[in-house]
Image (cartoon, rainbow over all chains, first blue to last red; front, side, top):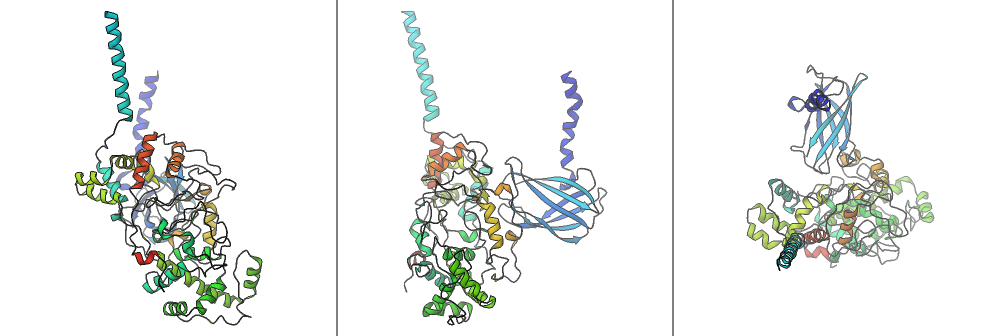
Length: 132
Length: 428
């Protein structure tokens, strides 16, 4: 019985990684409304240096989305603490690109950024993982 | 006969097993070899990885040698106090790595916290244990008016600059003419926007324009002191020499630099003991704020730490975004994107671990007399008195391992990378 249950549910665990990641370092939001990717101005990302990111928002079909409101929180789930700063979206650059300023990490290890995207009142979230 | 022999054999086996266990537990231990990941961490901690001094656009004279010479004099000048006996160097003593050997600083009275070293503070976005100032120059102003520290007032200080010909000369070289503060009706003898009712009342009677001109001159004193403090930097230690040898593949040289115990301590430091989570980078600090469950100083309420520091730095008129900053762009990412939240209750700023020797006691109120006592704290990870101890699980290291860690920390002591002339009072 237990074995049958395990076999029946095993595929869920196999698919789990797909929920968070996708091809080309982009992530689909939870409800599937948006696809998000980012580029750090600091390459590679180093700890203890404050810097900016350009966040790109598009539809799942790949169409850049304009007029999005983006907020970011996050932290290190294994350490039970948040980000050392409060990053903010400061400008919409255009073509689905947005400047996120005030990003800094103060420890090496596994981080998660919880990104909330709101386009015309349609809100969705995604966890962006980051290993430093 | 047979039974006696077998009994003897049994005892022998037990003894051998016990000896082997004892040897395994307490015998000399050789460090294992470094992995590629370890080497990357070692390199990140090396002083060779220290970037050039970050510019301070909020201080136009930050890199001026004239300002540093002026600041050097101010730093050692006891006239910058209420009773003529306290200078910056009272609590920041060069021979003690710019700390004072006391649990809490002692100036005019007893300061609220332990005097932090100023070595390498040019690299930190935040100053003080709670980060209530965001530049060396803004920090330098604060003790001058703290009643427990220098106990003076800004009117007194700017007037001193005007009255001392050498100071006036320095000031005018760097900042242009000093306003005329001689009219006592406009500029009283003593005035400052501080808690003291008489000083505050005198300050409030001044016009906003006069207050502003005093503030500019006062801020400039801080900027000169900061130009001096920027020169106080850590030098290469035995640890750095070891890393250099290891990275160049010279194992024999490396083993002659650090002892086995120190290398074992270093392995724990970057591994099991998880010290590099906060004590990272070439200064062994992330300059961030953490609650590590340090007990309060006997008789004191628990220190609220960063949660108050955030509020104070935002309200500081001398902060990076304020009108006394020299940066026309007010490019202040750290202050602009500073965070707050309950996580910061009782959080204090990670100290550098370079040059701990001779700087005891440790922690924000000098609660720990020895490094062994600090290490014991992490080994126990007690509940925080207020807020939440980020160190959730005790390290659970053995006494021997704690000794190794302590031995390793000793390898970070080194002479400063600052020319000797700056480390003593200036010769006038």
